[in-house]
Image 1 (cartoon, one colour):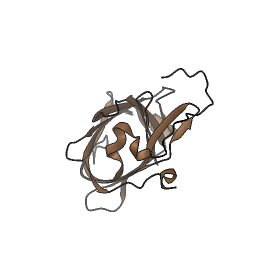
Image 2 (tube, one colour; image 1 turned 135 degrees about the horizontal axis):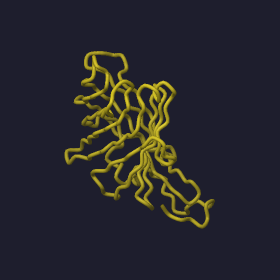
Image 3 (cartoon, helix red, strand yellow; image 1 turned 180 degrees about the vertical axis):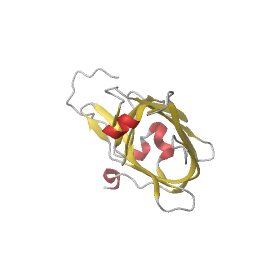
Image 4 (cartoon, one colour; image 1 turned 60 degrees about the vertical axis):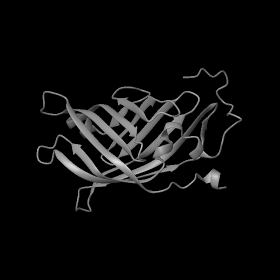
Length: 208
């Protein structure tokens, strides 16, 4: 974290072309499909589930918080079980990178009543990075509705992203749950490999 003396003045050298300033997130911009998804969850009937995923990651305009500057991607992830049309998982949020510090942020929201913000760091040319959110943290925390807090309390969320030489990228995700009635924490894991099916659309300011 940088100790800024002036917390109001914005940087003078903001580049409007987000796609050229995404650092380790650069290779993730675009529209992707993953047909090798696999979910291990605590449901005793459907606890091991393959899934098909579509995720769209589009560049947003540069985001200045006074002197702080983030470049990022807005995303929407949608997953179904093979051969079905009913939504299996739905998630929206942002991936953000701060060039001055190397800080990485993922925000996520799911319609079961949960939000989280995961935090990590990476070099500009990194091809692998990991982000973490923990229950109770004020800077990279997890917030859930009362039912989830009681029945499926999320203690930690961790995601590792790997950019592959063939142009695909993959993620490994581990969410640690305290499930009511179970004596040990449960590792709810998800993984997939994403293949690009369409290029990203430049952010509005760059198009202007």
